[in-house]
Length: 128
Image (cartoon, rainbow, N blue to C red; front, top):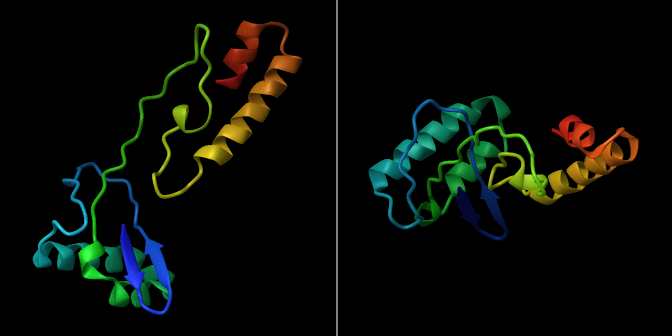
């Protein structure tokens, strides 16, 4: 995740699926060589998008560069007296801001199943 500071500020991140994990590092703890590698990789992975990506990379405040590992969560079934919704139920990117959106959608879908299913077990199974 990186921040650009000029007359306006922007926050950007590049997420992708990988078989390997990179060590998470906070902003301000990454060497100049590592920052160069991260920016080069970000440029390569986003070159198909064109602007504004090249400008964002060029204007990035180097001391703001950080690395975070987001991981898939193991799928699970709801059971017992607790039903999970939102980002408790789904693996969410920490940069997407979709946890609340997913909670609203899940709440709606769960409510629909509770209204229309023949019993609670069937409703939960259908929701899952």
